[in-house]
Image (cartoon, rainbow, N blue to C red; front, top):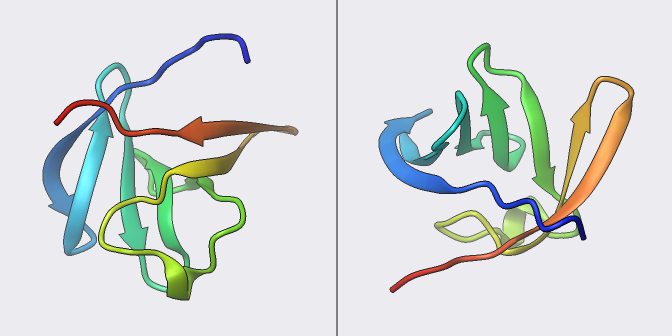
Length: 85
């Protein structure tokens, strides 16, 4: 809603799978056993995940659509979209 965009680029695999790193901060999107696709910080804390896609329905890349994040006592909902080729 506010026009904020965060860019992620493919990086070295974390947790033995595909991963993407946010270009401006140490935040990664990776797949964790038992959680599916999540974003994590440099300490391994989960800070966001897909909102309404079951782990069993998540594919080989992070699902597009609504994700929810938690920062302190606040939560945010945002859209994950893919750009480029």
